[in-house]
Length: 186
Image 1 (cartoon, rainbow, N blue to C red):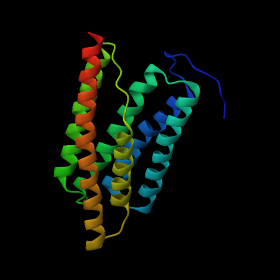
Image 2 (image 1 turned 135 degrees about the vertical axis):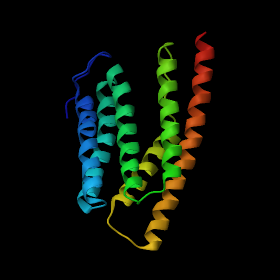
Image 3 (image 1 turned 45 degrees about the horizontal axis):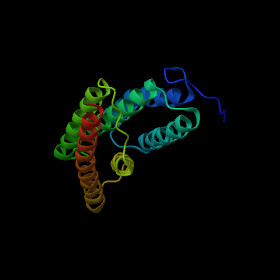
């Protein structure tokens, strides 16, 4: 792997290329889920997408994070996760309430991130936000599996509610951290 560094305004970087794979995978996964429902092929694509998410973080840290990557990466993640969750709701694999709660948090935090960013403030993600992402990814991955037993559905629902709890807590944490950063910048 190259150790080349990129300036903060670079767009064509290896990390951003990995992010674009997730952007391209989003409609592919949505079509797969809406046409075929849960399948092992969808699980395989989801695992591949999750690996690119981890890899782009590693690459960005090694080569220097760019402003475009700092914007595109979380946006791609949120569109992918919430989009696939919504498709799973449409197919009856997930209950809509936790998905709406997750979607609302992601929308609020993304809007807030843009607002504080326009004020020159960057709020780094806390470690629990990374745990939240992993639990969301696991919930979606398990929901994509074509296993249809009552125990399995309860397991997936429980995992989704853990994701909701982490999503709400980390969202509140982000808003509090952002407010502190904005007040310091004034």
